[in-house]
Image 1 (cartoon, rainbow, N blue to C red):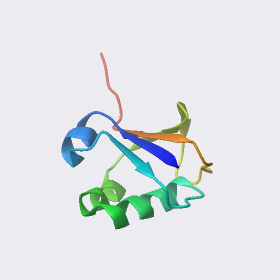
Image 2: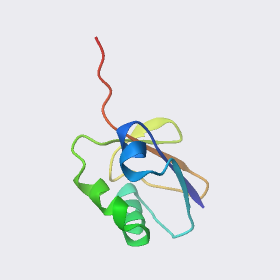
Image 3: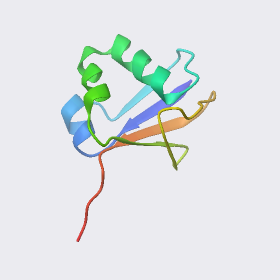
Length: 81
């Protein structure tokens, strides 16, 4: 199982803060495909510009490998001043 967390405007936009995915996903791109298939509202996630992702609290990219028990977090870019 992979735990998927959504933060910031993504959580508000998709009205989901956490999902547990049982489907075998070997990388972030495959995870996107799984999420889109299970929840039509999440299909827009693929089109979110500048989306940041972390695996087990370490920054990652779309080609990053996933393993059973990983925690994946999606969040918009953070700005500050």
